[in-house]
Image (cartoon, rainbow, N blue to C red):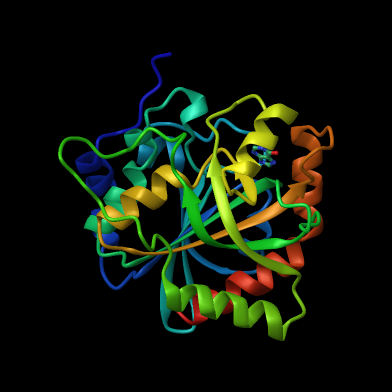
Length: 260
Ligand code: HPA
């Protein structure tokens, strides 16, 4: 497959007139798009033009927004790149690398995931406490011995949990495991992942989390449970179940952004 994403320098060049004062990047995964409804959008960019590739997955809009809330500006990527689309682990993190160079300090990564933990219900928002990286090729090269003892920022996690609690949003705190896909995991895979200690499984988030840690960014990971562990499911169902949680997702993210 010969798809590729622009080099970091090119992405920076495409966005260089917007580098001031934008502290936070929000990445919207499958089904999280509702958050941009009614937001004050200052500017919209098409992924192809900025990053060199479009979003190839149903449920990902493939647009980058510069938004404003109060006096603060935010970058919002509606969609992301995945290794299952043929990109390398490093390539899918190029937007993160570029935004870090443009001054971003906080990254909020959202996704859909399948439950492995039997206590989890469809619609729960998982505030990620850790990631299982064993199945993920590192986006880092060479002797980059990045510490991963606390991949998610303690304060951002606390803020997310507090907002869930005060708005009766059903949430969990748990461990996300990355599987490249694009096939969904077999029941045997899920059994094994559960034994390894994971609570939910998805096909994104981990390369970006590793890179963001390497770049010294604060990271928050949120994943919406769209299907249960040992139940047959498909991508349409994943999107439909994520859509049902749209109002909670919007409320949660809007309040988190106000605290960033
Ligand atoms: N597995 C992997 N990715 C997913 C799943 C799943 O069960 N649900 C939503 N994204």
